[in-house]
Amino acid sequence: MEHRIALLGFGVVGQGFAEIIQQKSQRLMEQFGLNAKIVAVSDVIKGSVYHPDGLSIPELLKSVRETGNINGYPEQEGLIRGLNSFETIQRSNADTIVEVTFTDVKTGQPAIDHCRYSFEHGKNVIMSNKGPVALAFGELQSLADKQHVRWGFEGSVMSGTPALRMPITSLAGNEINEIQGILNGTTNYMLTRMEEGLSYKEALMEAQKNGYAEADPTSDVEGFDALYKTVILANVILQYPLKTHDVERQGISHLTKEDIKQAKQEQKKWKLIAKLKKENGHLIASVKPEKVGLDHPLANITGATNAITYHCDLAGPVTLIGAGAGKVETGFSILIDLINIHRKQL
Ligand code: HSE
Image (cartoon, rainbow, N blue to C red):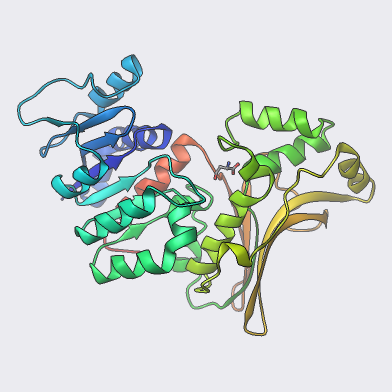
């Protein structure tokens, strides 16, 4: 069955997703009967093309590779250029909008408006942006439900590692009383490198060079990135309408090489731990550095890897370890939402 997709944004994640769709087209068809077709791409900087019969992914990628934009996409009958994001949502024949714009996580925009507009026009949305889920989960999910469309955001926490879908589907029936996680790759990488002798500054520079850090690393090192993910987990997994200001937050910027060394002497490690704990009908939420013993389930998570433990009343503690960022991993998070929308599963 044909599934038409419009991409809003054609940066690293958008291109990564397009490459996956191209490489996996035969497998998607054989395994799921899914004929995923990109009909539109609209990017505020790189340009915009739409064809109701579908666009050539190799031509889109070639144009970006050679010119940095998609204006070089070859002319063809019926091709429409220049639609902005809202016109693309309204005028294209896409079933699903893949929202991968550069979104300000503090305001959630423009992704929140893109979600609203898409749902109002009867279109599903898939995204990996944290902002809309952390800031407007209740409103947007209600709107999607009312309009009988789907909203996928698996990639907003731990990219392609199923931190949201796994508890929702495979741990269903448990009461999850506590969640603890390492949800930010940059800070975990920095703490690991500082254990190996690097200074805070050197470790941050390396994390930036490796592409783990956000454009403004303040979000990583001061714990905001992990805080948004914590709010998403509370809302989506624990059904608790936690807001960003409800979370106690402290980053790692005050930690020195000496603090790390001291912990090592005590057979401990500093980790930036995100925690959600149900207590007497309340939810206690924090993101802060904690000195954990080497037997702690998250102590041995090193480098940019993320991990999360769900404490379940029936299954006991279940820990998931995996990537928290990356072009292919985040591209996959979009794909798995698409597959599940197609096969009408969660
Ligand atoms: N900067 C983030 C991290 C990327 O370091 O984990 C994914 O949100």
